[in-house]
Image 1: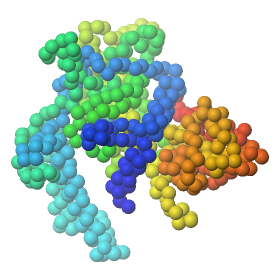
Image 2: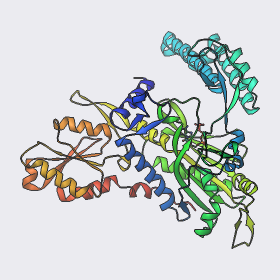
Image 3: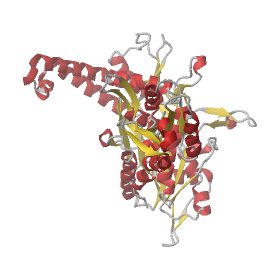
Length: 516
Ligand code: ATP
């Protein structure tokens, strides 16, 4: 199966088992907006808890807040979002479809890349064992021509984007003969800048003055509360403020399922440090965040850093942690050294003094900031795509199993009576009544035991417990492991301890270093 097919199966699976639904589906859906179902919400909550505890519980000098989505409109001027949070857009006059100009060009580059890959494949088949790929790439005229074209288009695009040259972007589209995927024509409008913020209107103020925005990031809610938290929490620099919450962006190209959404959730932490020490902290946070990801055991080789060459105007260092999704390595989390840009600008725009008085040195300064920012939905997709597995079993049967790290699994334990009679259901329910305060448990008595195991595998339940006739005599049950499918007989009195040991956050959190 190609990775594309795997991804299709994965999205179908996410719907079939109650993880993710298209928003407003009975009205044919609202694009790039999704709802989380009964399993999805549990997984999402578990990811949030892992992040929150790793930030706020593990580190004495990090505290959390929950700021409002609506904020004073001036905040978005101070942050630069009103002026510069834009995508370059182009419309096709025949299909009336709108595209991001840079994405059209990137798709064109990807097609050239595909052509090269096809030629290389052809060469490999033709020359067999003696095939030397490097030499083929360096000499084959078709490959050379396409590679040169690719390099040229890419460098023109980077130049145009850096210079904010909208006409330059349009020229590339025209010169390359890029057509609209819907109408197939080259009937393009000019390229325009399009602000990604959603706006709405306050009820009590008419006109321009009443326009407010749905926040495009949670970070600004942290910056504007810097003094509140620092003073009321008696926080000493270095310290951090963490927040989990919804953000909204009017994304033009919304694809790849929950990778790019118009309404999504962010988990952001702003760490305030002494000016001059920011690059040291940036390096520490890079490592700490990678460690957080790797501690889940989804596969160390699936992560890599991508350091930014072109920095945003407010940053003096930035990197992405990329994850290998089924559609390639893509940004999962951003770590940015934002200097004092945000606090200084809020000081300027609000007229309030936003400074920190250092009691040890007796000086006042505007702290610098290291930000870690991860999309909760992208993290959800990371867990799902790393866990999804189609397996052929020894007996010839197939199963789909979600190997979700037990600590994040939506349901920790399923309790299954072997048959629906002879007092077994009552016994199974008694076990759940005892354990439901500790774990999210599921009871299932329908269908054969094999089918019930499959259902639990499909939602990633790490352990199933089967109650059989012997249980009534010896107070023991069979515990089945999702990944190995191994079964073990254990006393009922031991179940809580065993499940706790194997699904607890503690061992995962213990792998992480404190910061600060
Ligand atoms: P991208 O380049 O993918 O648009 P970005 O660089 O604009 O992302 P940031 O502004 O740094 O992203 O946001 C921080 C994190 O928020 C990202 O790493 C990502 O995990 C998440 N995120 C950003 N935009 C979206 C979106 N439209 N849908 C889901 N998650 C998002």
